[in-house]
Amino acid sequence: MFRKIRVAGEHETLFLRPLILLMSLATLAVLVFVSFFIGPVSIPLVTVMAILFKQIPVIGSLQPDAVKPVYFEIVYYIREPEILGGVVVGASLGMGGAVVQSIFKNPITEPYVIGLSSGAALGAVGAIIFGIAIFGPYSVQVLAFCFALLSVFTVYMLSHRNGRVPATYLLLMGVSISFFTSSVVALMIYSNIRLQSSAFFWLLGSLQGITWQELLPVVLVVLPAMFIMSMYSRELNAMQLGGAYAHSVGIKVERTKRVLIALVALSVSASVSISGLIGFVGLVMPHMSRLIYGGSNRYVIPSSAILGAIFLVLSDDIARMAIPGKVIPIGIITGMIGVPFFIYLLGRLSSGAYEN
Amino acid sequence: MKIEVKDVCQSTGSFRLSNISFCIHGGKINGIGGKNGSGKSTLLNLLYGYRKPESGSILLDGRDIGSYAEHELSRKMAIVRQEAPEPINFSANDVISVFGFTNGHGKKEMKEILDMCHIAHLEHRDFNSLSGGEKRLIMIAGAIFQDSEMILMDEPTTFLDVDKDAFVQSLIMDLKSRGKTVVVILHDVNLLYRLCDNVIFLREGKVVAEGPPESVFLPGTLKRIFDVDFISYDSPEGKRFVSARAVAGSSVNVSGSDVYASDGSRQV
Image (cartoon, rainbow over all chains, first blue to last red; front, side, top):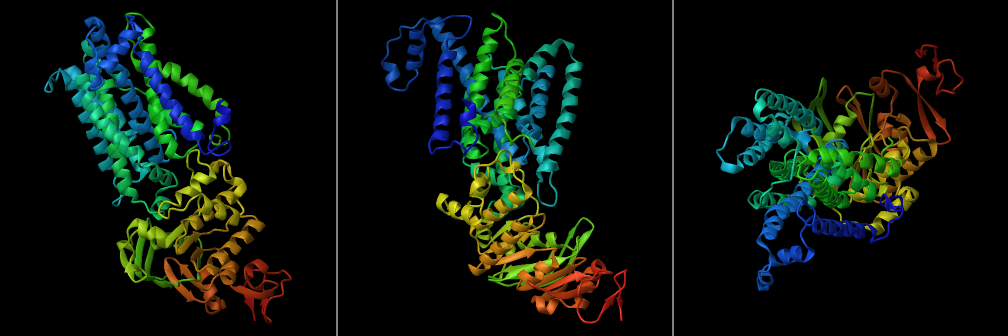
């Protein structure tokens, strides 16, 4: 199937690529719905539908309250924020990956390379190890978010050369700062045996336990950021040809780069603040999208978000089902199922494009 | 359209362009030549406003080039750089589409240009897997698709096989006939002579000659630029120039009664 729909052009009809995009969106919607039924407590279909219907503004209030409170608790307070958290985090990581790969013209980058992950880790692990509680129960999240942004800002400022921020400098500076910050994180974890497992759990990433109070502010940051990024697909296409060509076709290269890096930093920092560090999604979802649609960011940007969301919700379902009664960090699942699948896909689909 | 370069200085690493002044004439083919490392590509980066000169000014139609917004500048000039880009998984079509960022051109114009550049068969091919010559043609097609008043090309014929080389030359002539201004960096002196209406020669970051080919291609001037004696001779395609060192000891029918020794020096 993939062989037939692969790569823009050869088998392209006017509607094929938009149609596949719509189909993947429909798949995400179905997966989200199915995920409500996955967990240690089995909940009847009618009950789940009644709880979801209840949340629709205006007409939802017409429905009588006939649902068991325990089911409502599980669906509304536990599963729903976790599933929607998976959608938001997966989408922002996927789209962020597509954006940074285009900015850097580098297929092996992901949003974390601009110093984001190590900064978030420093904030979160620092809050866990030192018991910092200045933001109450949300201290880990808030500090992860702030330190991620601070780290990206530091990397960006240190990368200035003659009034410009060359992509290669930014990349190398991101890697250097990440190594330095990771050393500090390692030192903090090493020095406190008692809290090692909490810190490691955060570093491996998990969607379990996300609350509405954590999720809503993240959504308010991530959705507008993603909406704006999706309008930059033509600029990102031009930036793949290099700064000189992008400039000559009419793009304010430095300003566009600054805006996009700020948007990636905001959306991914907000996401990892509630999920911890989830790898693989930002690196691989853009490639899966390119293998299906071709390289144009018009499709790669939205598709990376949709595939990222699908992949993370699916991984979270597996993390919930794998060992009953146990919570497995989602980072372990994403690597274990994602990598073999991607290797399979790469071997089956690539022809020419990845062989240079 | 006209570009006036006035007393421009620019340093790149240990290299420096010093007090460069010359004119690019509208509706003509303007060639820039010189030895490797003479500053041709550095100069090109200044001409399309990607770099700002450290001192001096570059005026595009009487206005400082730095005062143009990027989208305005893109309507004025398009570029074809020497090295091909490496976009991730782009088809040739995706690459050319990028050049339509400000002009609103669509599929109809794209098809015309693909046909004009004889690359319609490459439209859906993966760009990175194409040959160097095919990539060059696609970048030229992109610059034509941009439909700006001027096209700047850096060594557009280098590494092309004979038929593509001739085709690119005919494309350049065609652009001129359609009223476009062309600025072309060429290392081939014969091409500069044959193709260009106006030639600017650089040496070590300075302009050493500027003007129509007939007034610039003089033995003394060429020697100052390239450090070798040149001999001219008539060929079926017109006057040609060849380094005296290259023909030393051969049977090339050189002009006049000059005789060249095996080290290329002229014997009177």
